[in-house]
Length: 255
Image (cartoon, rainbow, N blue to C red; front, side, top):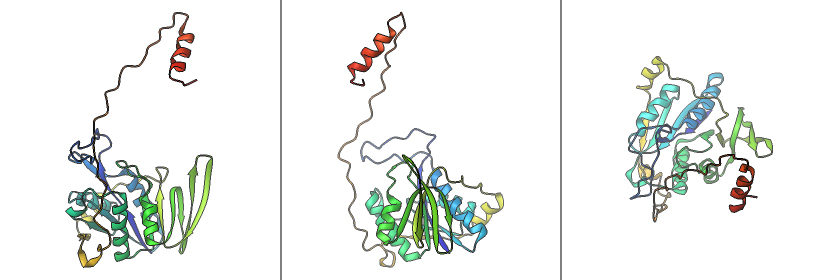
């Protein structure tokens, strides 16, 4: 089985994240790392590989700096990587990103595509479903757990009212949530082996693979910084705190 894991480089969530006010895009000049949810997606693929005959490939569309992230994924245990690298794709919105990923997946072939449920920068949460739509195959998204079989998979999807059991035949696209197992640590031995594992770099025009991805993208018309938070209202209980609280909530139409 060939398992493709979609991964993304994002600004470090431990640092403050800001927008470039000139372009409206996320400022990516600081520390960038593999998205933590993608490490969980890789772990799902590697856990299957531990018990079955499977090839695990990581796929990303991103800038040159994403190479370090791909090496990290290879050090975790992935067999190879594909890097869609082209300045013409900078600033792509979700629709265009999905089209590029679909083209890449069709070119490389797959049995199963695994992704995180949403990235920590855009938080759109729709790329896996859009990719599945573009490929014309089933998708099972936002899975808290998943069991992968030879020709099908099953999993548990969380809902507002409880859980839902889902099944799909392969090939399929799945996405996992933060309830999936955490990614394994890269050992020193695997880190050294990762240096020799292949990373295939594709441009937007390689072999006509991306002749249908289009050139459109979302355009940000204006951006501005969020206003600084103001101090809250402090109520000192002198025997009238209850009335003050009622007045505060009523003035804001909260009761």
